[in-house]
Length: 184
View (cartoon, rainbow, N blue to C red):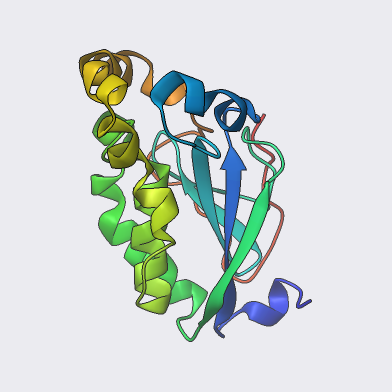
């Protein structure tokens, strides 16, 4: 494994960290509640250049697994980017206005959509569709469509209570390594 300083100015492995915000409840109860098997309520972060980048109250970063989501249930290697950390940070600065706390939507503009955009920039491909397709899959069920209005209201009122959050609209690590604060 490379140290963060060795990744400066070079590409990086890109790994999608997958967290289940339901802590196993979705897997256990989804079939009886919504009529389909849902394996988790997913939060994702993109790990590259030694840091984890995610959307929560803005674009955030931390050391991998050092955020409020806890331990990843799966780490999905996606490939190696040739983009530098500097290029990635320039991209994140450019798109930051699209990823502010007020733009968050539980179903349509969330951490998984951010991870998808970041991975598309880094590797030119999307994250796995079982993650990004989950909201429409659930909403296509009879109960899912019935509770869509409730979900919309919940998204407006409690969006950031469901996801790891940081401070500010753009919280990026130092280029090439260095200490990152642990988000409490």
